Length: 281
Ligand code: DGL
Image 1 (tube, helix red, strand yellow):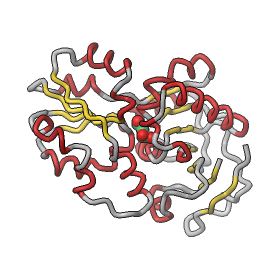
Image 2 (cartoon, protein in one colour; image 1 turned 45 degrees about the vertical axis):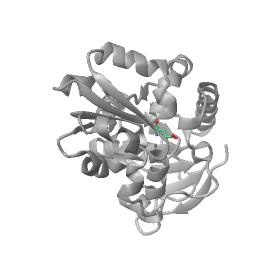
Image 3 (cartoon, helix red, strand yellow; image 1 turned 135 degrees about the vertical axis):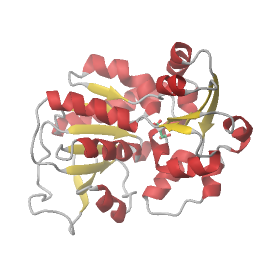
Image 4 (tube, helix red, strand yellow; image 1 turned 90 degrees about the vertical axis):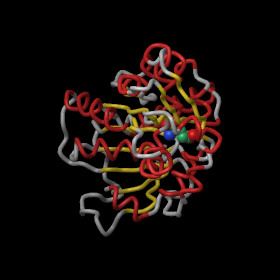
């Protein structure tokens, strides 16, 4: 693996973050098809401000929501093998529902470090729902996973679950992170055909890590009475528990690594999120 620095956040970057700076051995590695890893990392940063974070966005193969299980299995293994050539993270977070719902078992068999996955938070939504009507937004791939059927059967078998396989929302999240304007109308597109059903749910599950960026818009579209279940905070708490057991390191770089040849997050966003350096893999 060769790392090429896209640029360094000069305005914020302390001297020690030179391009030759080595990422600490025991950092937290997050993997997603794109900016979902950053959205989860932001929650982790609130709990562990000094923990070294490495967010990896596989933007070359975005969207994962249109890929087969076989493809994702081999791609995620290949990516993690490459990362392990240079880094030895102490925790791996598969910050992607589409990947987690098919790769977690095989990763846990292969890697010895703890692996935290992100799956749709059906359980807390079902525990909360008074009218037993739940909405679920996820990618089309997640929608068809047996893993999802099992989650619903185990925790929400007495609920009516309106499942929406979103085609555009993840891409819109990438667009917003790239600094482009995304309108409310664009956010609505995936939901149009389901509006009648979604208006009567009392809880909405975000089954894709990209979608947290549109929490406000979703509230505006569906109404504030709906409680949104976003797994980011619960995942961050779990990562914090695991990470604290593995020993703390005081220096705290936050890197973003992309597999795409072009940087797809705006520099302003990187700075506001605390990302110090961006690399391509
Ligand atoms: N963020 C990913 C998830 O949680 C999927 C986005 C994509 O389609 O690549 O499922």
